[in-house]
Length: 290
Image (tube, rainbow, N blue to C red; front, top):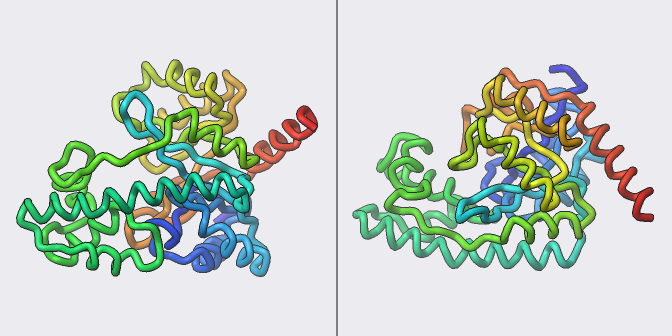
């Protein structure tokens, strides 16, 4: 793999990935990537170990996070890059989100049990290990128990929004999520726009412009589930409105075995120049704001 390639959307065992931060760095190095970003769900716990491992291995590791927010009663994900992962306000607010998840998880168990599925919260906690429990962990238990064949079936049948085992979770507002990232010195980016419920290519430009007005500074154009045409459309919109372009595999390790670190389904190539532009943007902000 070309050494000038990157992956800016990676989950570790600190949330719902199966690889530790150190293992992610080792794998990225093996894949020949030049830079990676750790973007665990609603937690920054994986950043410290990844950055330290990166320094030892000569791998550029960008501290990040992926925060779930609510827009128009629908879930949207905001990626934060170059955050100060030692920021106390950020840490406190993310701890609240983790607490919301912990309150939600027993409710999911109860719903699944009522559907006749014999799984316990201990089963799920054992699958998650030290990471934050998420729906992929429920999916893995359902697979292990033989109720479904794979994660896709688990989500479609029981865990996706609207499915009988789904429980809505509390989220920050879009403004709160974006501001939280900015207050921690980070760059706020709209994650995988074409996977957002109810948004198609005709509405995408207006949708992104709305998010720019409330503080988004970039758009994740490169993403495994985006088609070539969708990626091109997002790049064009980003350039038109002076937004940064980012991309990543959304790597989760064995949770999503079909997704490869750095290349998604094997055909994605994300250039390092996107990182250079993010750095230039941060320098410009610092000059402007002292």
